[in-house]
Image (cartoon, rainbow, N blue to C red):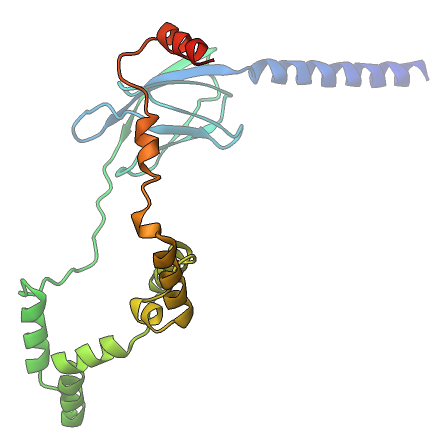
Length: 239
């Protein structure tokens, strides 16, 4: 019985020892290096270095240098605009520091075909478009009719105002009404309004046109260059 207990204890000790050794081998490693172009040996600034295992990443500086903490066996992804992705695997047997130069190859992509037509102005394009032969002659005649300038002008006149045009029209009407709320709307209405004529005749009888009350405001205007002491002295003298 004692021998069985000893064997079990020895087994657990061996397992713990193996785990401790494994943890010692999985210590973090400072991985540093430089990312350069494979073709021109140019330093690639702001290249992205990503470690999918830890979910961490970093960017290279202006000279392509980088530094990131990794673990042995990690696979890093290097990416840069215009270049193919590059994968780098950290060796299993590595010390606490590791460095390397990562070369990235350029990625050439074929763009879609772009057709350039020899039309410098819209009028040239319109003439060439109308001169184009269609399979359906009736459709061509309808096209010419719809593109006539007189037809386009008629459609433009029949089209309603846009949202901005309606808002501006409404704002102009409200401004006009607020500015003329105390006056007659038009000279024609004023001439044909008997109440306006009655008020005008009464003002003539009262002599409103001969009144000169407004001149008193100019008489009470203080003279220029008068000091505060002089004004107070005049007030005391009048009292």
